[in-house]
Length: 196
Image (tube, rainbow, N blue to C red; front, side, top):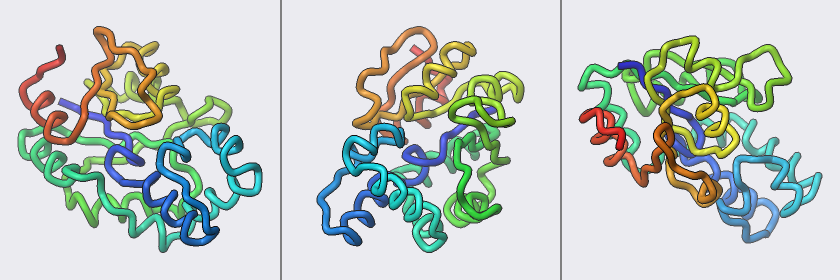
């Protein structure tokens, strides 16, 4: 079985870290819910300058390399790997130093990740969007947290586990899209081929 895993806010605790670092530097009190993974929404909360500050913080190697994994992700990924699943990270990340994502993944997940695919969030560059990539690469399912990616995956017919986050509460479940609350549930449902 080939499984896709989003990186930020599914494997890495990115948005919580970004909000904390922004608050430390600029004396604000942002939460992860304020900094949803959609930069257009950031403008409403922090304005144009704040959006650039967020990107600058995320692009800093010292911040991105030292992100902690989401609670339970290390154990869940290792359980899936030990069960024979081939795991691939499918991410929209574009601004980090080449190789940094792979180094972070190896640091936390050892050899459990078989590869990394970089996708487009908006379809305006040459990289495929997540749904297209998953179909092309034969991924059986994916774990994702961002609503517009989930809709692309649904349209492409890809079974998607929605990793529960404050910014995806509006996502509607159906025969292709199922909500999961933590890594224990993800690994159990995938290992038991339970998609109900």
